[in-house]
Image (cartoon, rainbow, N blue to C red; front, side, top):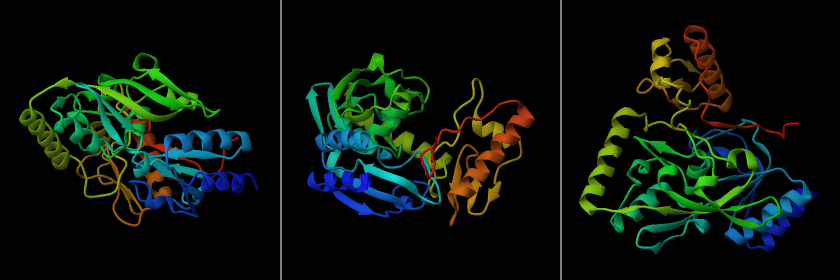
Length: 306
């Protein structure tokens, strides 16, 4: 009953509501069953109202962007999924060196916008298949760069629907971590401060890094990028390889033969297949090396956990 009340509010806010939407269509792993309903958020203001209403009505919800770091249960998601899509992906210059981007803006769009304005500092993010919201949430990084190096502040929506500005120093940004992973605040937009650069140099760096991604990463298969966090002083992919797990498979899920740090969907994989591979890798690596590989992918259970 309360879920329908929330969805009625979403319709009144002119947000598109989709019932029994398959999560496999909204995640880069291409797995997962149907959610109770999905709301395509129409604006930051409508999301704030929906977050407030969901908490007042005690309706389970999750906010997603490109779904590039999520693994949903094969049974789906018992609750409402708020989709930060193309309705909340605007981007603009604030001053000569500062870019404003809404949470639904893709990192590729953000990087290309920076290039067009001769701004350097975001090249590392070119090719990461996520959105601004997800990148801030995870402090996304690659090739010696991280979001924490370029972010100035972000706007967040709290449980009561109020919108607040959080400065970078208060975000608790570290390796694949932010305060937003524990405080429940929803990132709605962010400001990035970059340095002036030369167009050709910025473009050359972006092309170089994209080439390195294509040559070393299994981009031809659905995945969530690096499956495991890097252990202190080690590399997850190397540990997995040294344990003889290259190509280890369960059903359609496999430790990539191209890069052992990736678990990929070779075709027809279920979320259970992927989880089985992840757990086997964790157990084997810990038994053989003493290192426990923490999963970088966020696992989304079917029902609310008690």
